[in-house]
Length: 410
Ligand SMILES: Cc1cc2nc3c(=O)[nH]c(=O)nc-3n(C[C@H](O)[C@H](O)[C@H](O)COP(=O)(O)OP(=O)(O)OC[C@H]3O[C@@H](n4cnc5c(N)ncnc54)[C@H](O)[C@@H]3O)c2cc1C
Image 1 (cartoon, helix red, strand yellow):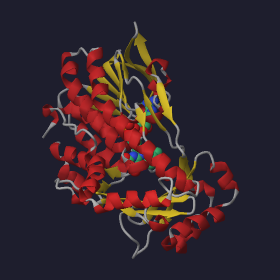
Image 2: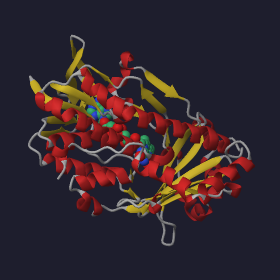
Image 3: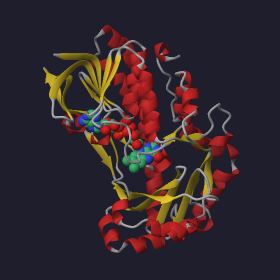
Image 4: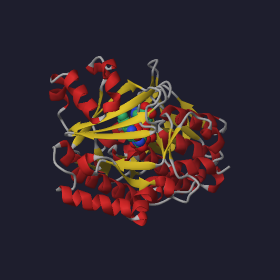
């Protein structure tokens, strides 16, 4: 029978950070990751100041700084006259060591965490291994059944199983955890366009008629996102790619000269935007964190950050019980109690952005109900340095800062 102390299902940002922190604290931890590597399609590149500060505490700041990256210091929304972009959060103005968002391909961050964790004798990661169901004994989750990509199956028993397997988590099928869904007005399309000499750098937004878009500078190409009203993917595709590119380039005219490089709809991926959270993140023997516990909207780009912070809090609360080999319900409950307020507040702000900005803009109406209110809001956010710092600090560090367990710090 295979056994470990902590079985982490999923090697995304939450799972890899948790694995590293626990292993450094001497806890035996096994991460199961269904893919063979971390090189996947685009899943977000933002590494926020709270994660940068964490990497520093873990002694990884220098290695992280060597990764190819771009720095973003401002957050802009299309709230100005004619939907021009205004800065609603100036992270660069914060007087903290890390006052920027680093744009780093997610696989580079995950590889760095995995390499570092592999140095710990108590850590192991099994790639190409998918957890297929939970082992449950007398109401307690005691591990998982798994299947490898070459068809082998097995059972891994654990004192605690942590579901870090994202928004399609195995745990979400458990009715006792209660999934609460919020309505989202939009879906997102993702595609790439070449980047050329003289283009802007970093994160660039655009707003057109019933249209919002963001471009992420990834060196030789732009990772482009286009927000479309929820459920209109099929209808819009039927209207033709040319029509879409005409709308897109009207919003972002400086990309018009290479719109023709997008040749087919196959190159445009749909992200079904979801906003939800579990009512209970735990049951005996099981804890859910990151997207498994709460899927976030792409608004503010903070899904990775929240997942990492969940992992840090979970490590801090669980190191001691895991070392003792006895994790009680009160231990996993403490993690939810700690992380729930930040999650609920962040989702509430995303819902406000959905209903007050994104939904009206996608319907061709002014944000915040009427142009005068939008102008008033814009002035408030841009003229008051203090008010401008509130969203900046929230984006950078979240509502509550999490500190790793002392035993994991280097
Ligand atoms: C297109 C897109 C763009 C995004 N952009 C941003 C952005 O710019 N900024 C931002 O902060 N967030 C962004 N996000 C959200 C962000 O990716 C997630 O919030 C974040 O990755 C959550 O981390 P996680 O570790 O909880 O889950 P995930 O990153 O989803 O990781 C889950 C891991 O578990 C593995 N897995 C799943 N099921 C199993 C199983 N049964 N067994 C074993 N392994 C399993 C998966 O392969 C994956 O590696 C974006 C998401 C998408 C899809």
